[in-house]
Figure (cartoon, rainbow, N blue to C red):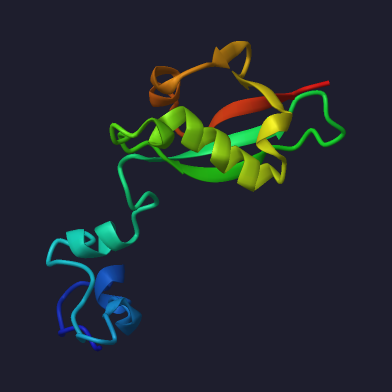
Length: 139
């Protein structure tokens, strides 16, 4: 691109260095930016971190264990059906067992750090993303 001849001795950067072609979607050949150079909503939705508004990320570790690092996992807080076997607390226990490779009968309590016990569905509903949980094992 060559700027039009003008009386100015400088050329603005946006004219000297136009947008790169990689900003176009290769399938549709349309730019992912609108005329105001803002990202289009479709692209923003595709790049969303959480596909579901009820899905949260929890950090979990075993209390007083050799390993002090947390394991990060996704948990879906979608309301449960009337079936007692499908409650949030039971699903949380099951997810923790799967992620931490421990058996359900080994878990004594779930603690939300610093010192709050998770006991029922209402406690699980109050959990937010990136909250830290500790699993207290039976001795």
